[in-house]
Image (cartoon, rainbow, N blue to C red; front, top):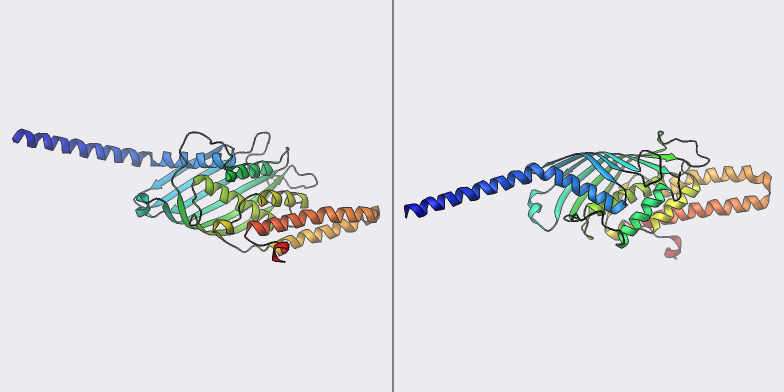
Length: 310
């Protein structure tokens, strides 16, 4: 009997030591696991290299801090990057760790830097938009054999301090180092409540939201043909409203495009010396770019085209 008790005690000690060792391994490795999941998610969605400098997951506190996320440019571009994110802070519901989906009350993304580079064909933004379209259609090839990760529900995702730069655009004097557009804040709500969302889906969501906001705020700064390209690219992606996501922003589409119309009027006036036909061609071409950008962006944020209102 004593021998049996001794064996039982030894077995219990072995189990306790094993559980503690496994717990220590999981806690000590959680940052690396989370970092790898984010890098995989970005690469899978965009088909460009994604890197993260630091990741700190505090399970006992229910918080995540990340810094130095970079989405590289597609091959063939000389600018530093396509997309960078300075800092991320998030909170998560500890009870959801055992549930089917992680519940994340809040995520704050701060300091986003995007370079729209037309120095190759297709441009870096068109290449990324094409990758997102393939991703949404399910045609994108997995980045590696890593699992896609657990689905999440994010109650509030706030994106702050978005800076858009222009590079290698004919007729535009701005350099990649100069800020062309600054967007103070966008908030997205109810992410993942109607459609399942994992790390790759979140990348897709953030990038298309930032590019849509760039179109909306880019009137008078981003050339009309670029606005048209971005609008057409965004048109091939699922709108936020169709995903059950509510977007909150101070941006106004009509006001943003008003500056573009003013620039168009100036350009047409300058062309008047070249003949009436040149004026009509210029008006038609630029109007089409503006209309395309306007219609596609309204659809992106869940609005309806005028034809649909009929």
